[in-house]
Structure formats: structure tokens, C-alpha cells
Length: 116
Image (cartoon, one colour):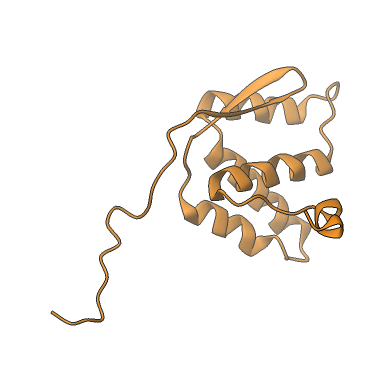
């Protein structure tokens, strides 16, 4: 056998703990673990200059990360004219989910400036 071989086993550890967030008083349940590809797909389009690419990527990420029933309610909430969810809030939710899935907290401007 060659020394240039490595067995990566089952592809990495997965988290089994529940993952959820609340928005407009509703609880939304997310999958405890997510394929790494889902995060890579979202990241690959995050620097696009085409808003359509960014929105498709974000919607796809939410669809993959939320449990089916929660995604159905989440999508309905985003279409509700009486319960506004800003683009900034969607970005904040997605960022938090990425942190949870990757296990790597992202530094916000206030954290990086204070050195925390």
C-alpha cells in the first residue's frame, strides 16, 4: 500500500443536538447536522454581484438546513406582508446557522475591533 493514502472514515463527526431559532414568536427547527456542500454552495455565491444568485443561494441554504415542516412555515412567514423579515435579519440567521454547523463563530465588526 502506498504511503500517500488516507482513509477519512465516515466523512467527519456529526452533531446530534437539536438546533432551532425563533423568529416573530415562532420556533423553527433545523437539522442538527448539514452536508458541508450546503455551506460551500452558499459561500460560493456570497460574493456574487448578481442579487438573484445570492437570494437563490440563501433560499437553498434555508431549505437544506430547516426541517421540512419548519421550512414550510418559514417560507410562509417570509411571504407574510404583516410580519416583515429584513434582509439583514435573514443574513444574521444564516450567519448564525453557519457558525453552528461549522463550529466556528464568525467575528462581527465589533468583535474584531475589540480583539475578542
